[in-house]
Image 1: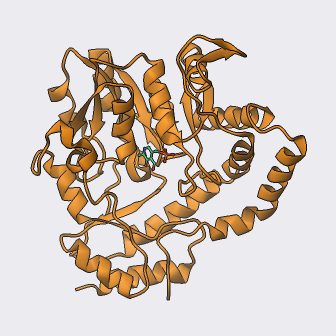
Image 2 (image 1 turned 180 degrees about the vertical axis):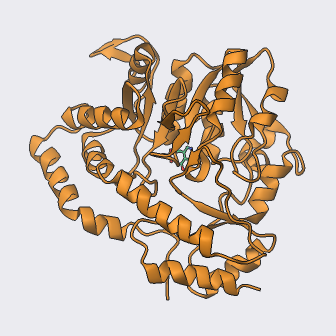
Length: 370
Ligand SMILES: Cc1ncc(COP(=O)(O)O)c(C=O)c1O
């Protein structure tokens, strides 16, 4: 049996008619940037996230950059970023000219550990960027408490967690993206909500911030040929907005299907060599990635690949050891938890429409590994 790490085909087959009619709708209108599709999707996605505004943009990295810029973060400021995340989170901080400060994650959840945040806060700290990695919400009650105590902005990186919810101690349950001052989403094709190309968005409930973000992503312009900032060009085009709107209608079903697969993995994988992901009580993850840990990760990967099962590693080199950041002067041992995750994490196949027999095959093979 051949099981890819990820496949878009089951969802694409189901949405075939909707996607083709979305294409025709836009093509016949012959209007490709800043139009009704963009408006319609932005409204629907803001409603979905539980925020007042959504501003579409070119990709998830731009979403984070635009959010930081609109908050006025730049030169001389420090921004706290988990040491275990995709490099885009760090690059966004670098692009606005601020200083990256890494915070180690909780090895059980892979997410930023609130217990490690306060010790790195200085007078220059301006923001925390919690990343809801692999689709699992960060511990937002604790992070929001710290942000209020030190008067810091929160920019959530929601690139991997469309639709994940967090249950607060007071009993309220909210979608991630609705906690921060502004939150960035990626709609890269492989995400739980993916476009048919690059796309992204920022959600916020602050109208002034939403206007700034929109202007920054549109040449710094508040209205045509009137420029109030030295902005850039990062807009969500009509075609992608139309596709995303169709796919948004199915997002809950997609996430539910991923939860079913995750639940089978969590209950049926029984092998002492493997550490399964931990889901805290507050979290309702959407399983963008199902990451297990194994001290013999590379052997397990070869074993699964030889059996026809596709796997991946998120991420094999932590950001502080990447060549791109050698100027920061970090070395092995500086962020041991991120390093441990990079050496032991293995991502299993996880996508909408995996067949029962395929899920079973993955479980059986992992249980066979000795
Ligand atoms: C955690 C995280 N942040 C940001 C991004 C950037 O998104 P994009 O690829 O759309 O620029 C990604 C994309 O993979 C991501 O995983």
